[in-house]
Length: 346
Ligand SMILES: *[C@@H]1O[C@H](CO)[C@@H](O)[C@H](O)[C@H]1NC(C)=O
Image 1 (cartoon, rainbow, N blue to C red):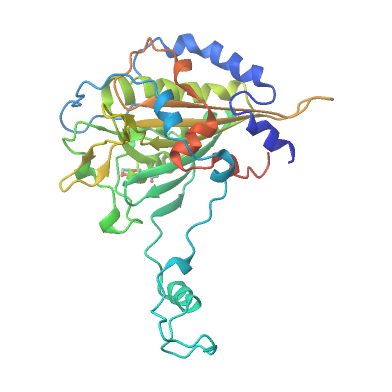
Image 2 (image 1 turned 90 degrees about the vertical axis):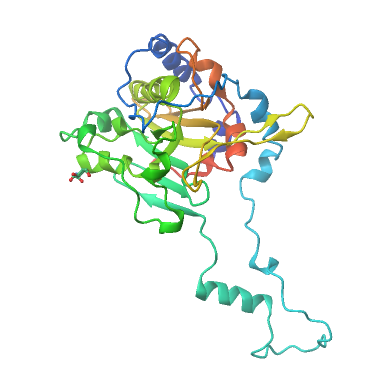
């Protein structure tokens, strides 16, 4: 689809972008209403230790975090195995062309890695009934989750109930890298769903899968996971009234802040004993809405937008719009190329 680059290049309002804005206008009042969110996770242990983080509009930090030119972000090649230092070749004749068994060549290192495994992966791609996640073994939470919502998919419910689900450690992750319930216990943070349970009501199994800790990151509870974040999730679901297909990427972020010395640093908490699960500074939702062509002469339309929400207590009066961010800036900050995802039937 040649038009895609054009659609996405603009970032925020793409194609029939009016629909995107209209959807936002329609739902904004509900977003600021407050009230008990349906999708909030229960706190673990003690009350959230919100050490007075103030709402920081992430615009400045985001742009600072995004020095990479857009053209460079799409397909930055991984370091070649050739970067592994080869054996000292001092004294080896340049004409020594035949690789003896003792000679270490780039090709041999490559071969060895291919056969014995590399220290990677540092992320695990995990597929589920209702979503896909990429789990980061160092941060011990997802680097992204992806889901596809339609009005119909949200209607389907097989008696799924979050009361029947419990937060579960993901045994597919090796023990050394696994996120644990113990790390969250008395941390003051909620186990925050990246893909909300309420997006996975089709079956109890689908909902259960959203409670895997590979779908969870530490979130401030009050004012965030149980409030503003839950409203944002609800906003995403309501986009299915405007778009035939809604694709949602949820992306934890670590954004730098400028210190008194003018330098930018990322500072974040790590919970657990010993410390193991990192606490993101922000969370992003990158949303693609697709309207299928309906009727003669109507074209398929795309809208894309992103929100970046600080991991702190946020007053419900803050308009969601104030957290709207350029999609490219979010991608550069996250190291994630959401626009590269090939949406098979789009
Ligand atoms: C969902 O999780 C609960 C709690 O672990 C378990 O008892 C139940 O069997 C699970 N249901 C399905 C369908 O996987």
